[in-house]
Amino acid sequence: MTQDGKSDHYHFEEDGQFVTLENGQHYLRYVEHQGSQATPVQFRLAPDEIHLVRSGAQKTHFRFANGSEHLTHYQTEYGRIALRVVTNRLDADLNLAAIAGHVEIRYQLLMQDQLIGNYQIQLQFGA
Image 1 (cartoon, helix red, strand yellow):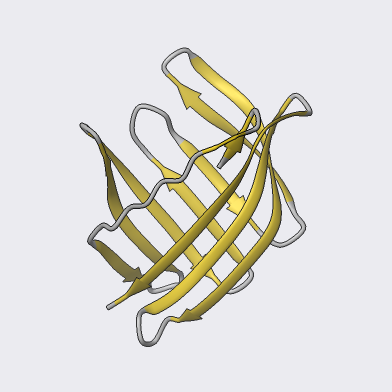
Image 2 (cartoon, rainbow, N blue to C red; image 1 turned 135 degrees about the vertical axis):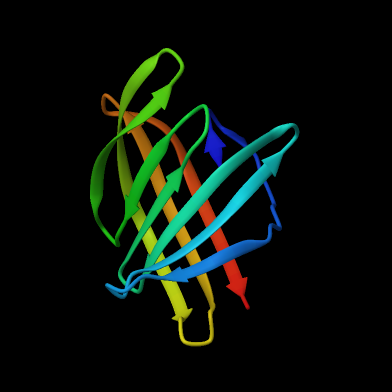
């Protein structure tokens, strides 16, 4: 993550749950622990589109697809903030039958056409 010229890196290893619904949609769910906070996280996985939902005090729902922009809201304790998510890169190598895969997402967040920051997610999972 890069904001205001400063870069930060976070690394998490969490146990999770892989779920396939009757409609064929695949979900990876886990709880992210950072300090004393526990945040439920859910990824909806598809080769050409990934959805990320984070619950907790601040709620987010981001949709990533190569070259796409997605309007969303970031729910805070003070109210909703409108955000634009610009996906610069989505690379998903998924073997859903083996419940394994690697996802790399590079994206930007903008608020009122002002760049908040550049972000990168690398997700690796396996049964």
